[in-house]
Length: 178
Image (cartoon, rainbow, N blue to C red; front, side, top):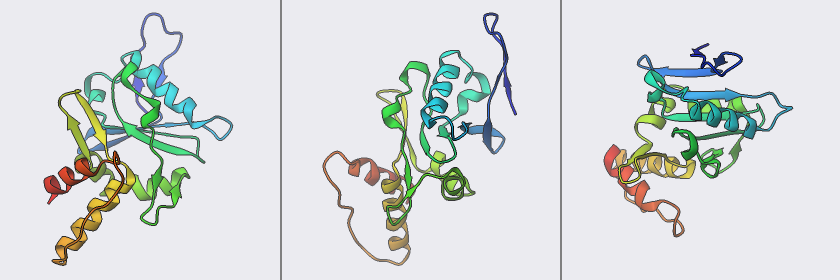
């Protein structure tokens, strides 16, 4: 368990709950709360740590935050302090569009190898204009995986969704990953 450096005005050290390393680099940070607390408490704690500069140095490499109280789990792209936006907290859904809220089920679906590597390597996009990392939503990930499966079988198809759902970003990521 990593202990963040203590600032002069802090009464105690800050300990990160779980850090997933990929090739020795911290890429995914998980903040855990018990079921007596809402998952938003975990989000507020990550935001507080970020505003205090705890995600600097090597921890500036973190690409994905996961917050959970065991029963409700969400993820979002890492960002700095005030730019962390709770509106981007995303619940995971499986390929059948069923919610995956339990933290163990989430870990099995999203944080297992190689899916965790894919989330930060293949299903993230850097928005150069806003200098921001974007993690794709579950339905975008599932669409990309379906395109890859179809491509491997030399099948064709199309991605259909509503306006503003991220079809352009999905198409860009398909092209990037193929």
